Length: 620
Image 1 (tube, one colour):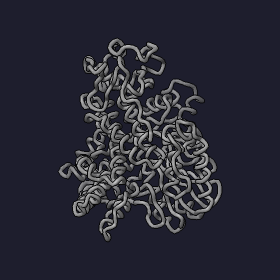
Image 2: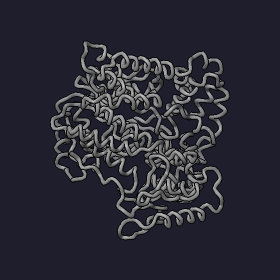
Image 3: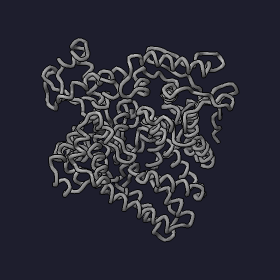
Image 4: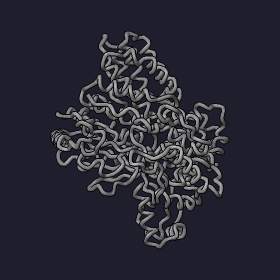
């Protein structure tokens, strides 16, 4: 059984909590954290423990709209007060808060911060589950969940930066709760999870994995009629709000409960694993991309190209396109189609050991257990068990050599994440989706997703709000999709929001989206936020690229910028400007002409919503 991490800080050390209101305790006594702005600074530093936090980020958290001229000096005062209050870090007496060229860094040990302990317990629990120690996994995951004292940072959420971090923490909590509930169900203890799952489903009604776990817990507790009613409510909700059907995995779970008393099993996560008898989920709202879809089908269907990279910014519809293609290619891949996400819920890259272990489980590769501690190290675990990871990689290559399957590696952060996973021989094909171009991979076939054409975007919006409402004010509908920059996610969120706000005229909503200061605030529907998705892509960029993007976003408002204007805005030479712009093209943050054209003649563009977010972050 995995030994749990140290529970709290040693005597005489400060223990910080973000999983609820911001608090700090010394030997059990709560410390006064000062005025609100000082607490915002501390919360922002604690949200990125042991990592330099730029002064600009702290400034945005404290003064999101109009920072005073004395903002930097005020920050120094707040940091100095926090340094005095919290004392030194560790037994060596080092400064708790350090200032360097990268910003301010707050030194925190794992036992001193509840979010670090939460992550450690969650990783240990998943590692235990990977080894088959379900009882140990349930205990560790429950211990992680018990750290939560309420909505994270609930006293400081009027700061956009803090609210964004709180949203990420809540997403992590939901995932761990799902892991724990499914583990308890597998252990034959479904009743312990029923009430908590019901409460969470009420707050997150469209989160399918939660609802599937609730169905299973009810069914295995002998409450079959209630379990079936949960599915029926979900089916009606999906049809009413989104115009979609539940995923095939969810429908299969429902059918199993209607069977001859068979015990329902935990379904594969929606859209995660697919095989010959279970094609990938395809949303009814999938629209457009006929050229890209045709190209994908031709390239993968002919069997000559084994690796295809579909790239585009966050929210461009890469995953939807990949799943649509996989669905239509069922007869070409008789040994199955499987999809694995290469990032975790919080946007960080999964280790190679984790990905190989999941591929092994989904495809029945022998020896597919994750090496001990595999969640902690990309090379096979904190204990350095690289030999086990290498053996699993070899087994995966052997499986690919013997089968004709389609492997979808979804949301790949960089080339290193998938090297070693691609087939070296045989007839397997790999379809990769990524925000960046992954220029370091070769040979591959590349498909870059542009913004949706007006007609495609309008068709997508019409599927969500109804063709009649679209026809009633076509001019306003066109303004909406253009304000979304042709980004499929933004168009979908607009449609979902308008489907709920049926009283809202399209023209009024178009006016809101046209306002640069309000557009991203409007693009939220339930727990789906365009800003959060764009923020994930922003975090992928290097610090230098973020600064460059912030400068170029101002030029893009007029419809694009030339190299000469970029050189002027960046205050550098021509060669440096070319490298800076091309770095952003490689990262998927700047678009360039489809045809060949010289660097000086090209008109470059920053997608509108990404440009608005860059304004928020960089204050350009």
